[in-house]
Image (cartoon, rainbow, N blue to C red; front, side):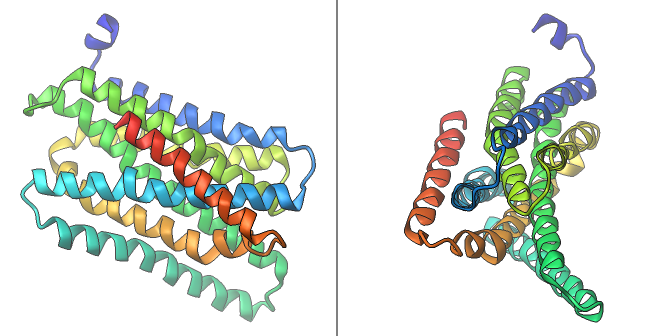
Length: 266
């Protein structure tokens, strides 16, 4: 802790977000435990991923966005609603653009799988950007002497986000494996979804005062993108299994796991 105290806040934020990225990589590494693609197991993990993302959307993104907006004396309902809808709308438009070019090229099932992978990775990556910014802002706020900002609080925030990133890394790599990617590729792409956290952490620490105003909108934006992917891709795909009831149960389990992590770690 003494070593950390003597570091520049930007470097502190970078190290903290390297940790959060590392935990994302650990979660993505779960894919190595699946040697063969068993449809039922993969559909169950897809349902689990959907539950994780729904819980993360509220407990990691929308709830903090509302609280931050209130603390900044912003219209929390308006900011969060606009952010949430904008995130979903972005992926909706991206979906339409992809389908347009896909149809011109004589779309096939392989292209549909690629689209699902792209939407999933994009939504989780968008989710990690405001989380990285939040960690950077927390460390940068200590430097600016903002009320309530302490190094201990910033470290706890980074720890909480890091642990929450474990199931999120899994939520990316397992569906990618289900779509036919090798375990190595699924892991690489899964952990890369978290690489934006160190980058955004540095930006947050440097531009702390400006980023604080944007954070509520960005958090809600990421939530909207995640919910769109869950409804558009993850849930429908998991429900192609004959055991639809069991797949739904796994979604509940994923939600509960993420909720417990979020609530317990604040």
